[in-house]
Amino acid sequence: MTQSRFVIIDRDGVINVDSEAYVKSPEEWTPIARSLEAIALLTQAGWRIAVVTNQAGLSRGLFDLATLNRIHARMHEMVQRRGGRIEAVFFCPHGPQDGCTCRKPKPGMLLEAADRFDTDLSGQAFVGDSLRDLQAAQAASMQPVLVRTGNGLRTLEQASLIPEGTQVYDDLMDFAETLL
Image (cartoon, rainbow, N blue to C red; front, side, top):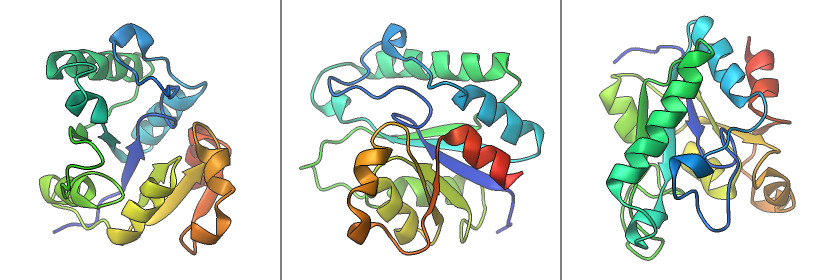
């Protein structure tokens, strides 16, 4: 197992605008200002990027796997146009009541990423906008990073529940610039 420079990023609310009604089509997938450029900046500086995302809309029948793949193809294409690269997307298709091991706040997707990339995630950053992202990071021995985009401001209101040592940034670009 190697220790490579690796950043894992949540999707909705960190890379793209989140929606209470779910992002159900490629057309509904809208990047947050500077998020794609932040991924490009990290990529060009030698950081490897993976995305982990809960996608309960699949289990709720709001969209199918082919649509999710088209949404992710749009994300990959838009990141690549800016000179960045997302090496993999890991998603949980289950709903909150399904009792799976992959749905955040459980660390299943993070551990899968570590296994797939044969890397030690200890101390590596996991950037999210919700308490469950921070809890998943902590469970995987990663560095929890909270951005104020998406649900980030609401998450900050739950200060007593936020894991100790969590780093807080305005957005993904603020994180990327600080890291570099």
